[in-house]
Length: 108
Image (cartoon, rainbow, N blue to C red):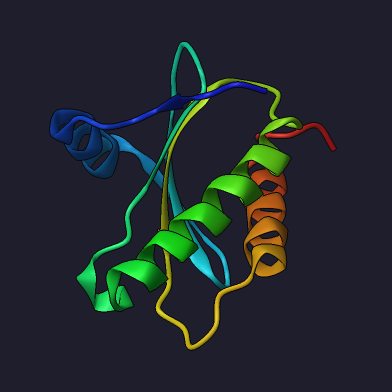
């Protein structure tokens, strides 16, 4: 499934101010219903140096791509990882799957 990337500051602000939040063990997902599926990742400097931040972003994008196939309705997503010692693809994928099921964004 293809999805758009969110890049504009006004879009980030809109999602953060009006979106619904869902929490998992490794990340927080803020989402809004929309015309088409879009996604962004927020990883600030408190997550470490640029190499580490970019790795977290790659892992989150790949986990989202794998879970986005199952979405039943288009939404705009903002993914915010929680600070941890170690980040893994499987943890993010499992968390996204459980959040999507809990929020009824995928068919049961």
